[in-house]
Image (cartoon, rainbow, N blue to C red; front, side, top):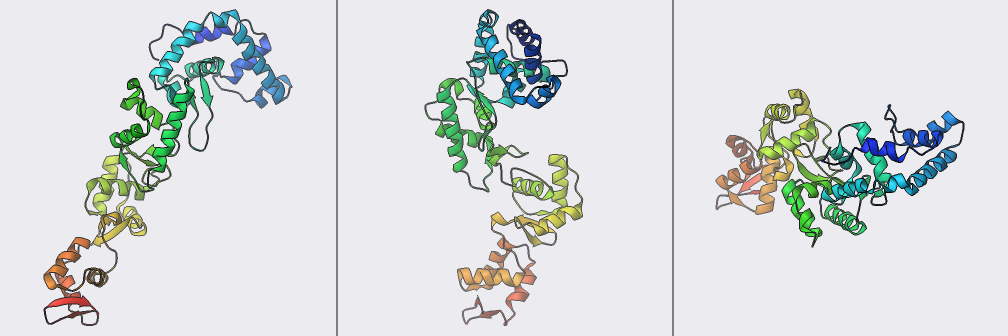
Length: 342
């Protein structure tokens, strides 16, 4: 837990000491402050006392109001001020998960901190929605700026984008203009980015849209894409399999990897067992199809130029290209020695 001059569990004990037995039990149960640390539902507590959910909610609300009005609570404001300062150091707005885990890995301690955040007017809870995870803030203006900047950043991303973390942080701060110097650091930026449900990073630390299969890796084909993209040039499917095991500690069979590469349009077979990424510009199809597409696109050209162009698209043997080029059914040679598609 961050350095603090207070003990949260002792604060909880003090500020709830004046509550009646049932009110105290409802608070302890709702916030997981008892020994079993489970946060109980309104229904669970209602069944225990033979009362409705609404009645439990009223008791909870009444107990919280009673605590806030008590002199004991008011005497502990130094603790809540210190808590506010710690949240400010984290960026002023932070996801509930990150905030609680920053204070402690212990679930019981997290429950006490969550209870204190709920009690104090310093802190505002923003419920999970379409764009963002549950988060807490201490400054409405800062929260609004972070929310808007994250939405703009998401809107600027293409579905296939994978961006290095440092680059994404730079883009994010371009939307967060005139932000205070104290917040212009990577740690704060990463906490703000982690609020978003729409943007996240893959196992290699590259950021993109959470919905992208390049970010939300779910199987061999997604891991294959990442290792090939990092490699930067065509790889044999056995190399891909070995790289997946080494990079992600995930075992895969050669046959499984081969089958996944064949089926996925992100990959192109460019040689015997050799695959490239379609985004690199490699073409699918047999040698004849590749030759025809090149000639139709770029016009007549001499034999060696055809070989050179085709070799950039696919890993065919030179003789394979020449044999296909000599087939008069598909290609013709003019008097200048230039080939074109029939």
